[in-house]
Length: 511
Image 1: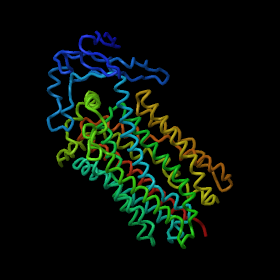
Image 2: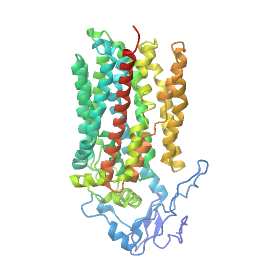
Image 3: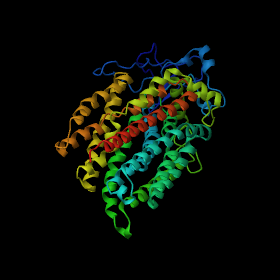
């Protein structure tokens, strides 16, 4: 059998053939471990034009991309060490077709990416249900002020920030498959415990502890996904990962519309039932995470899953395509922790600091209108149900723009371009908002604030950018946490500025 290979110098009839399932298999008397390796595919190149499209290759041609492992000298330098958990599946001569690769990636998306999105959905459900609680007179019921609300948000973000790096270090030591389910269970208990809030002290304590428990979850997931996907695949997966955040906003708005109607049941406020029900839902996701998060692509077998998710051939494809894309991913075991010296070396990498700085500033123009959207709608005279439903359009717009920005970033192969898009979107809307006064129609205000809150969310693009520019698993572990810490610092900055402006306005308002 002779099968032509796109972009290679010869055919594969001497060394391999395609079976009836489209899998590349060695012919009789040869193997993929033979000294003479099979040919490789043409290196994939990113397009620099938005309107140019890559020609789809024949699915039955070789998809294996060239790498340092094709050079005998470099192979010995980058060969995975024996302690690497996937070392037994590494084979520099392994080859696979585009059809096999497509099927494996689809399986990983269903098994790994979808569950990561569900877990982030749960996090956002508990992180932002305070927004819906505000539409049910939450502050008045607990005798709280807007300043108390601002302080709680700042404490939540500060504790979230402080927990980022320690959480990531724990995850690297015990494995994200153990630590992430633990996080989910811990914060779900705190979330439904808000059912028993009594006043300012318990409110501030709960929000602070919730930040500690949730901090580090996002960089933990980013590192976990990097075990399965290449650097060019990760940005789109992270875009859908954050898209689940927007789905959570929409679903939680409908949840809140129904749950908050329980106000008065057994003499209790509706927001108490909101915290209780959504916290219990997260607890269920946490239990599921113990069973649905394998440590790595070659460690999917368990007592409740004796056959695992991937067969030997699929494991070979997953491991070798990831290592060919980034050979440094084998430099640490997935249960190997970081030393203090290693952390310091990663923090010294000045090339990542411009991305960290972007993390601080990129949300400052659009953050306050988004954070205080429901409070603003209530102040405009909308009732609880109207407020929750009117918050949905901004979520839909933001989710669609998130995916569009991620596609645009990869299409033109520029993360900087995507970063600029956010500011170009926000500037004219913020100018319009500045010109509004007490005579402005509430619907005009609503339209502008909705568009501001529905900004193109570029955070996942910058997270993937940080991961892509990290030159080792060790650096990726630290950089993901550092970037997210800077993002949380940016939130604290604009919340603090808003508190100052509110105080200044009150102090200078004539009696």
